[in-house]
Image (cartoon, rainbow, N blue to C red; front, side):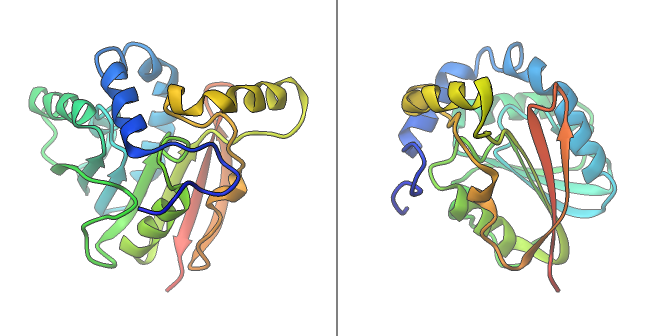
Length: 215
């Protein structure tokens, strides 16, 4: 794994695992409630496609019940604690389209090139140690003509929110995510064409970016 992305607060894999070991028991009742509407919007868009889908940073599996049966879903996550809860969710549910839930580093995906028709990452890019590497890996494993969906918080420069994000940035390793994270950070793949940019609920705090991989 390479060093921290230039200009961003440093977060390493151990920070992520430790943060989500703490979060796993309460994640669904806290952050999960906050992002529920956004999850539904993103999965509704994903359901406009068919084939194999990869969700990077699947977490506790909040999105898994919402994917349509025409999608064969693989989920990966760096946190074994979060994955354990995702597996419990699948075991309790009736969806038969979840192919695998795997502990894996999204900066070094163990899949061949062009493996998936759709790749999705929700609330992930501010958490991973190398967001640019994750984008490149998502592009690599997406088929030409396929779709990459990124839903994330992106920081702003101005106003109270911008000042707050800059102030919180020093605590990124303790929080387990980066409050200060400009969208340009992940616009690094020339083979991904940005098709749309949509603010999603709640309050437009998250943005959904849709890319198409050039054929």
